[in-house]
Length: 92
Image (cartoon, rainbow, N blue to C red):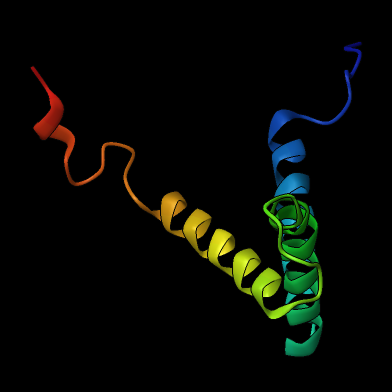
């Protein structure tokens, strides 16, 4: 008689895929307003303190512009290739 060590690897993979799909479906249920609120909270949490340290008064238009500028810069950096458009220019 063989002793089972729990679910097989394929069963574990299927369970992970099902969990990820369920999470994706739940995330898709958020309204545009909820997604906008979540994005605003993320930006304020991650970039707000830095902009405040740079001298922008929290809640001011300059502070909001600073946070959005930093967020947009990070988004651009994440989508660009690591080598960038000037990769060969600095090689010796």
